[in-house]
Every structure is written in C-alpha cells, then in structure tokens.
Amino acid sequence: MLSTTRETIRKSAKAIGYPVDVIEKFLRSEAEHTFEIKLGNKTFPAFRVQHNSKLGPYKGGIRFHPGVNIDEVRALATLMTLKTAAAGLPLGGGKGGVAVNVKSLTPQEIETIARQYARKLSNHLGPSIDIPAPDVNTDSRVMDWMVDELEKVTGDNHQATFTGKSIENGGSEGREPATGNGGSLALYEFLRAKKLDGKKLTVALQGFGNVGYYFARSLVNYPNLSLIAVSNSQNSWHNPEGFDIKQLPANITRPEMIPMFGNAKQLSPDNIVKTDSDILVLAALENAITADNVKTVKAKIIVELANGPISEGASEYLASKGVMVIPDILANAGGVIASYLEWRQNLAGKHWSEEEVNRKMGHILSTAIRSAIERAESEKIDLREAAIQLALIRVLGVKVTS
Ligand code: NAD
Image (cartoon, rainbow, N blue to C red; front, side, top):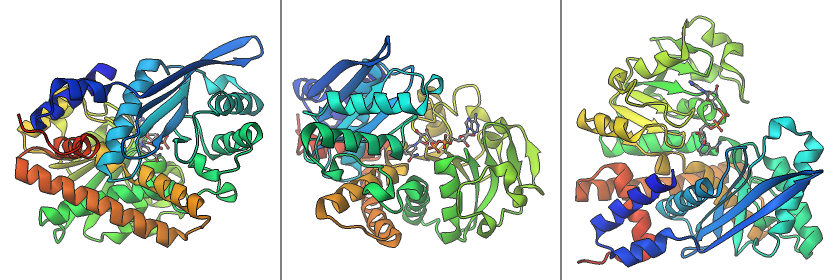
C-alpha cells in the first residue's frame, strides 16, 4: 500500500513538473512515533505518523486492528495529507493505530489501551499540532477517553484536540451522516457539471453500513436519482421500479429489517456490481471491483464512497470503456470536512445545528469538486488525477515548470 501510494504521488507530481528532490521530501513523514502499549503481560505495537503540516495541524484517524503496521500507517497518513488538501481544508495529514484485535478485549481493556495511547502521545497532540479522529474499530467513546486522559496528563481540557467525540463531549451534529450526505452531494455536483442533473438516472448501492445507509437516505434530496438496488455482505435487493427512499427509517437499520426491501428480488451480494444501473455507488470495502468482476460492470458512473474500492488494473479497464469515476479522495471527503467543522466549533466554543454543519460542509465539498472537475477538463486528465494534482499544488506551492 505504501509503495502504491508513493508511486501514485510520484507520477502526479512529475506530471506537474516538481523536481525529484521536492517529491521525495514530500513523501517523507515529518515525524513518526512508534511505541508499545501494555495490557497485563501483553504488549501491542502502536504508531502515530505525522506526515505533513504545511497547510495546518495533522489530521487523521486512529485505528485498532491486528493488521496495523508502520508502513500502513505511513501510507494512510500520506493519503490524509492529500485528502485534506484536495478538500481545501487548512489541515495536514496524519494517522495512527494500535496493532490489536479488539474483538478479544473487554470494554475496560479497550479503554486502557485508548488512555495509554493518548498518554504516550501527550506531547505531540493538540488543537494546533495534531488532531486525531476515530477510524476502524474506534468510535466516539474511544475519543472521549482520550480527551479525558490528555486532560489528566497535561491539564489541557481543549476538546479541539480530538474530533469524532460524543455530542455531550463537544462532538458535532451531523458527523454520523456526513460521509453519506457528502457522497450524494459530490455525485450531484458531478452530474451538474456533465449536464446530467436534469436526467432520470438509476443507482445501485453496494454497502449499507454507516456510509451507504446515509447516502441512500440523502437521495431524498435528489428526486431524479432512483435507488434500484442495495447490498450488504449477505444479500442484495433489486427493485427496478426504485425504492421509496422516504420510507427509510431515520436511523441506521439493517436492510433485511426494512419492509420496503421485502418486495424486492433478493440475490447474492456480488450481483450488485452487475446491476443494470446508470450509477454504481461503492460504499463497502476496498477492492470491490478487480480484474475478476470489472467486465461485468454496466454502470457508466461510479462513486467511490469506500476507500480504494477499485483495484488499479480495474481502473484502467473502466477508463478504457469511458466509465467515469468520482474518486474516494473527493467522494468520501464529507467525513473529514465534518471533523474539520467539529474542530472549528470547539475552537470557537460553539455548537452549530445539523443544518448549519450540512450547509458549511456542502459549500466546502462543492467547491472542492468543482475545482477538480475544472482541472480535469483543462488538463484532460481524470478526476482522481486532477484532485491529487490540486492537493499537491496546495501543499507544495505553485507548479514548477521544467
Ligand atoms: P460499515 O462497517 O458501517 O459498513 C460496511 C457495509 O459494507 C456493511 O453494510 C457491510 O455489510 C457491507 N459489506 C461488507 N462486505 C460486503 C460485500 N462483500 N458486499 C456488499 N456489502 C458488503 O462501514 P462504513 O463506516 O459504512 O464504511 C464503508 C467504507 O467507507 C469503508 O471503506 C470506510 O473506510 C469508508 N469510509 C468511511 C467513512 C465514515 O465516515 N464512516 C469515511 C470515509 C470513508
């Protein structure tokens, strides 16, 4: 993952004209913290990589997962630098993790790990230094423990050091649906730019977790988009007439519990990729489309709400067939933008309504998408390449012509 990330950046930076030494310097992290967390007689490797702070404090999640290692964290921190810059935020990129299987732990043990993590990094975190957030297997509870521990160690009770906290502890309204809401907004801006916003289009959606669910719900704002298929890891549900989005419950529910899926044709989950729809939204896992299934894709527009849901080989094939992809770096940026807005509320001692958060998030995301579309058109490159180039130019300064 690290070498793929670095190669992608080298290619984009070279296309803009940056010299090799500038690119290589950018690829190196500004700081890396590696330490151990002790739980009884066990120890778990822990990491925080602070990749780049040119545009602002490091920003990025902390994951608890047995597969976490320094190279993965380096790659994810580098991608955060690109993501915050592509979204036009005054933030840098960082990432952290503990190599631990939370499924084997009690809530008390998870709390011990979270508190030790914050304690060990207490000199390196802060609202203007590094602002972590939840990621895989961490949530608002974990962030609340970290805020509390940091206060115990440093006396700093600044809630703005972490985002993704509980609402009672300074969290933001609208954080939970932000990535899904941002996905539909990104899609709409794209359709508008391509003059397709007035057309009736069908949508198939892979993944019905946090991101997929709120994406589906937000389609109520776009009556020209008809959701005709949905899947999770167990099943897919197809209704060519379109589901009545208004019937979706306000809070996340498993699809098999939703009555409107009862009348739909139920198939295996892999059928979703083959759905005869105009738009395919990938909101489940990485590598959902690979060389094995790419030839079955019928949609002409793909929205990457998951991170890295299309393999590199599959991307090339889709491009050769004229399939347009709204890349993860833009499509799922609603989450990090909501985190940024939480940080701003904490700094200002304010608590905005969900409408206010959505409005501000919408403005930031629409601006980012429009800039990327403009660059893609003027440079005749795809949207992913355009977003990466814009991010690099924001971090490294004006293009250097060779
Ligand atoms: P989640 O665990 O809540 O939901 C994942 C969904 O994918 C579930 O419905 C699951 O059943 C489904 N799924 C798993 N395997 C599948 C398969 N083979 N076929 C179809 N569906 C399958 O996770 P989430 O928070 O919704 O995140 C989804 C993706 O979005 C991840 O890649 C995540 O990294 C990315 N992402 C999430 C956020 C966020 O704010 N939660 C932000 C940016 C990116």
